[in-house]
Image 1 (spheres, rainbow, N blue to C red):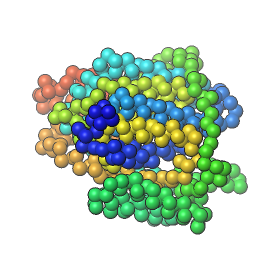
Image 2: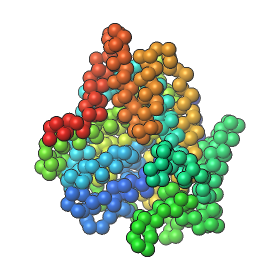
Image 3: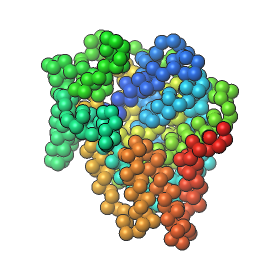
Image 4: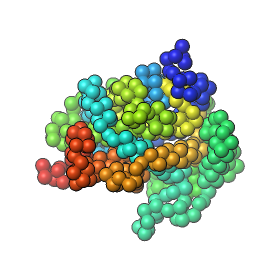
Length: 485
């Protein structure tokens, strides 16, 4: 029954392969259970309240809700979309909600706008519009999106591991090697060991290469922390005078300690349902609220298009026209995830490109997503276990997968400038701007303009022209707001 429903054999996989892939996906994105509370949990809204309307941060409640929604939606993706794709609170989207939207209104109203955006994008899926846009994108631009995302997740891995960091002060370059041009600390050593273990096992075609690498690196990280007492790399207000404590030799997010208060924690889901659907329109102007929803909508819409495309190419699931099996169902689940994220007060949930790590381990079907989702549900109880895994142990998998996705670049015709230049901009702008939608938008607009200049307007799908116009509005939001204001 499993094989027939998920098409495991048809897609060249096995149950064991799907389980390993699902576990790798979970370990490479489990950080969101810890990171999301740090991003939205310590930010006060326009009324001076934290999420939940309290005067104290509700970190544990946010973590529990983050894991719960990720688990339920990822399992739904596996069952309905039958695709090796995991979902969780969207990074970038949660920052936008916390830093931009919540500063203008209450948290309940901010989450109401997230729910509203999710409802709109769900309607676009049900009417066939989102699928139509997906199919309107030229096949070679879809390949460019996949390659660009490969570079993007490789950069994410390098930055999260501390191998690449921002240049201190106002240096001549935006990023540099390690801390001030040098690799420092044991965490970098753990990262390097984990990376080379994965590469060695992959070259030898060992099953479970990424999963084994993450496990070994985590064990070494725990031993290193016990031996050298390394600690975190950053503690807000950690110095005696209240200033931020910075330890360049420390761990990036989780400090790999064995749980001190037990391996199980009781979750509190009290934040679920705390949203006001139209409250934002009463707390700020209607035009300003519409622009906020539009920004969320466009980013969510095309981040998913890019992620689904990249996963499909990496897994070898696209047809000759670049289309994905069960595409409508995949996009529907992703759209409902935005609604669920807002309704649970944890920001919009979306598809995660870290799913490519699971695909790199062999995941090809929705069974892997069910495994990942089950792990997230267990995380609501086993949060202390997840907190043991540092960035430095999980991120080497992103480097390896970035390489695998980069190999698709040979499918682009670099002699056709109408494709080559848009593809180039798509590929480089994703990592350079740390934003998938920016790369996609630049590629779409450039493709339409160049084809028009070449006199080949008939080759441009009308929907692609309309979407490119929307991206122009997206890029020009600040001048538009100044003009309207």
